[in-house]
Image (cartoon, rainbow, N blue to C red; front, side, top):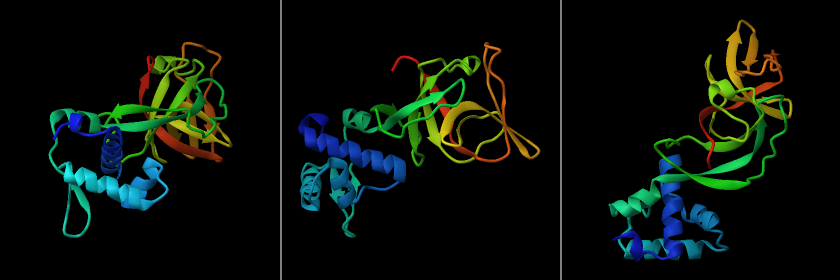
Length: 207
């Protein structure tokens, strides 16, 4: 079986099934696939799974669940990416509001966006992190998590605004430090009303 033997709907289903496997460590259920494919009925998703089984892409086990068979290298290459949403703009200057509506999706290798974690992109605004390699307009890949260690670059939620800064914990205080050539940027010192939304994985300037 090769990628050329699958129609567009079957390729889309393989992508969703692979993404689910990479992110959650299991195959999507029929209803999850129905939602991912934007079908109105689970029967449509079930029929699609049966077609993939008939073509040898997946196999139905005795417990009724499906598993992937070995596919060609070409199919595996397509399936080894995860779609990561771009959900808005964040500040690398003063904090600004990041609207939680998806603007676009980008396919990222699971070697960068590791399985079993959730990721999102934010567009950087400002120059307070240019010494850390994050320039104004860059797309910043974020691994969603609520904890960080000293020196991590984090997306911090302050009241209803977000910002990217270097995380430091000193005694009872949290210090969010800029890393900039621009002296106008100063550390943000917090004791409460603070939440970590994620840790920076990588910044991209040409997406």
